[in-house]
Image 1 (cartoon, rainbow, N blue to C red):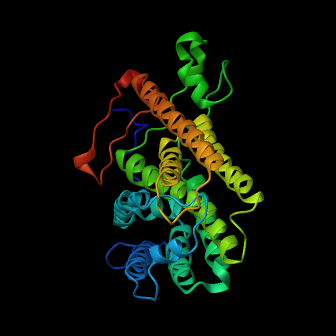
Image 2 (cartoon, helix red, strand yellow):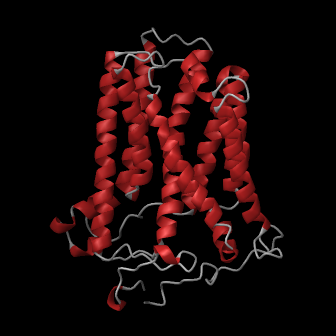
Image 3 (cartoon, helix red, strand yellow):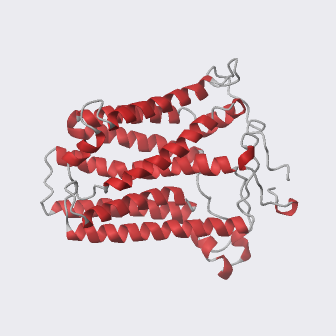
Length: 343
């Protein structure tokens, strides 16, 4: 195993910040790590109470009260099971004493802000209908913004390659058999499976789904404010939002090979299309919007699958090594030999 595959998350060139919130307590865990754990459990508790109607109307009943042309089918919200599982494991994993610097660099304060202020406030504002749902919509935009900050900090996905060939990660990867060999000549730093599944996967799914939810939430706020779904502008506006969501998924797959983010949006778009095909009263049916939704989910799933293929190709080429992780022995393996190791 190459020395480039470091097994100690805190044994790198970065110095530990001189801050009370990052310094270890008696248990070896930093205050920031504890705040992240507490904040996440506050998020879970408030979301559970809100979903069950403990704060008044339930989250689902509020959504049903304001039908739009882009409301997903009820089954689409089952993605929260995967999101909660991955982000829950991430939150617990970052609390390892040896992960103090890792937690600070990857999550920082953004995760606590996202879970406590973002999700907690959104749940209350949503079920209470503050400001005709505009408070909830703006809060969800804050959730997406803080999630995006984490997404940038962790450098999710695969960065574009250097050398000749197509100008983005997906095209360079998929056209590798037909292009110059230099398009795949640069190896990436190794990522542990914990980083790939819990960090990149959890944040990617979470950000992708909340991005789609934010678009739906703003549509609901418009309806709650008196916007008419039966006007000529409504189908155009709904179609525009669907295309915008598709563009985000396509760009994530194209430039980052990020199938987590793209897949979450594709899932949401599929839920919207299927709801348009149903007889549900939670959505305003429109043939043109249904066709755009079908096109959007098809393009998004195609981009997601292409990103998966691209990742597999890079992995088989030895350009996406998996490092050993000292905190997760059950998840460890490395496809690298000494000749393939990261320089």
